[in-house]
Length: 439
DNA sequence: AGGCTACCTAGA
DNA sequence: CTAGGTAGCC
Image (tube, rainbow, N blue to C red; front, side):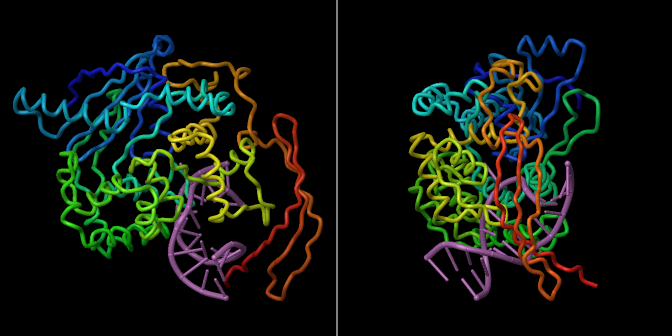
């Protein structure tokens, strides 16, 4: 059970792919991450470009294990049953390699894209050193869709827990694996459940109890909508043997890869819990629509600070993302970055993630310590990466209080000071509705 | 037709 | 109070 398995190598530079960034930046939520045994030689190992982590993902019939060194991607695949022949072993290996190439889109030269973006955009140029190797994964559309339905109004940590909970509760156990360190409990692996399983009406109520909140109904309804769709016979035969074992609903979804972006988006947004943002994430991350830029508040901030997109006056501190504003931001960024705008967006987005605040600095080195830059080399912080140091909140007045004892309207001047010494003064018209607790 | 709001939950 | 939003209602 604890036999040491050798890893196979695919030559690959860190500038083409940074597993540490790509697998944790909120594209896929299902990878398990293990630090490799912290021994005394670890620091030197890191400097030698040896792997520091192992990443694992359960597919239909196997668990893929990945590590990364300075010059190679290291992989191995674990099956519940050992291969019966050398031919069988070879066939399995070939499939895994094909999957890796497809999933990481390794035929696309990321360095060349970085060069192009840097020429077109000085802002990108400033970030490219610190955030290299960030590319878009080519994910399974069904899993991608459900994961991003979970993502609404949510954080990466909880989304990951929810997605793993879906697997644990709705798909059969495949196998268990000890952490790579050898010590600790074996971890069970389940593949992602197919549409037919999540379409059952009881699923909604059970997902509620599992802590999915209002997304429980979205997931079940979307699954049901897809399963009950009337599929064209033509859509059930796709060229690749890649889709064998998939349900018609999954094949249909994947078939949107062959449609125009607008058409595919139209179809996606018909599904429950899928708005523009979620649809665009799916278009970009699993349906080959590389030009699509999903827009959220982070992306809007970036677009405002660096690319001259308007910032509506803050009513109540929150800027609602209207369809019009969404379109403005998306078009602007697509225009700046070109064909692969969605890919460029993910570099900027990752650089803006709080969990990556120290990525590429001394505090937290990227995998294997390459591309290491001192904090002085880091670009000017953008307003979104600027950390708030102090905020004086000056309540000016409270205009009315109605009979139900809700504060309905309040005006305040808010001063915020940032790490770099700059500060902003905003007039915030904050509408507070403080609901009285039921008694 | 845009502009609200409620919606689940875990964790600062 | 927020976290990579969306449906439903006016």
